[in-house]
Image 1: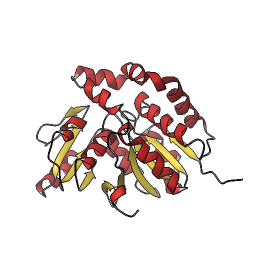
Image 2: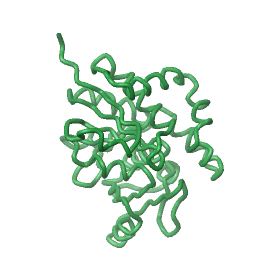
Image 3: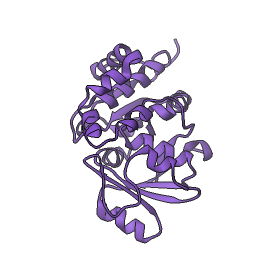
Length: 242
């Protein structure tokens, strides 16, 4: 009988302590919008992304020559080069630049799983690259939903369910959180926009005039890169031996 590693879902950053992350290849998910923006920035030529937890750290890296991106409560923080919209990075010349990045949820999740076997980030815009790479690892996978301020959210759970569904033939599923995420995705697959339009974060983004960010974040395989967390930096795993 062929060995099949586990795939599991952690529904919120607050639940990460329930897992021994050292046992897993971890995928950090924050599709609205950090992990989508990471993929866009790397595909646009950024050499490295330094995800940091505080505005102070981000400013300090700016003084060292990094471009800076900062978001709090879905809004761009004044005084930084970018916010957290994928369109910020689509429209910028980022070739061979270094980018410091801090967000409300996604960068916190990356810090919390830093001791995992390997850490990558995922979004619909790089989903096929991510799924192919996970199959190649032949290791247990933990899909970590960043959520919103430690709460479970619709969009990250939906994406985790999409990845788990893609992996199901090659991986084992044996916990309720993963089954919940897969069930959500299977119900929403042809109606993702409808489901997300009823999510709390969509309403926050609409109030800020950012509904196009949601539409972009639901498009699949626009950016064939894989953000890989290595020594505190995100680099494209497809361009380095990992």
